Length: 213
Image (cartoon, rainbow, N blue to C red; front, top):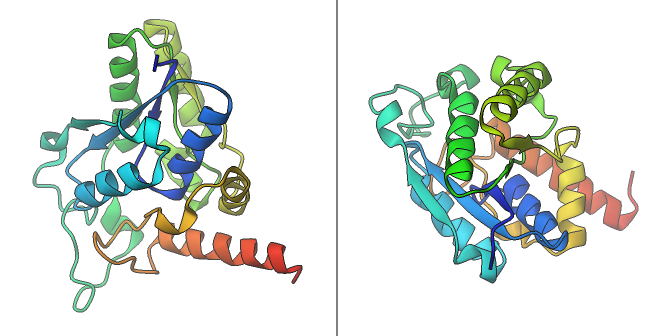
């Protein structure tokens, strides 16, 4: 299969739905999974191999950039003991994370002769963070396109998690097999921002199906 686009994947609901959507468009997808030292890196990889379409899952390219955050106190890097430790959103901060992800993905894409990188960022509570804002993504996208010719595409940028879940259902994404928890690498915690958004979206999806308000 030829590769038309690079897609950042993690085994989560959003990025998995993105790959199914790109595949439906008839695009050849080269999935890129970044290992930045996150404690759930293995879970993300194993999940992605299960949930992506078979012809795409076999092409996943894991990329190790974990040395950058080695020693970081972030709870994305060092897994918390949820029985004894409290974790706040501030505890999950990683400096320049989205700048790093998109720059690495753009460099990878250009090195493989690919002109577009797709990522599944959505309009969520994370949009309040500086490196998740529309202004940040617009400026970074312009710079990468101007200086390297790689275009960053975010087709779900204005979507809510509920809208992504609805699209996932329409596309036949195995929603129940995706994994989005930021805190636990084995069992979803149900309390981190990703888990909360996911649970609310799936609840709304069930209400849609049942016709309940």
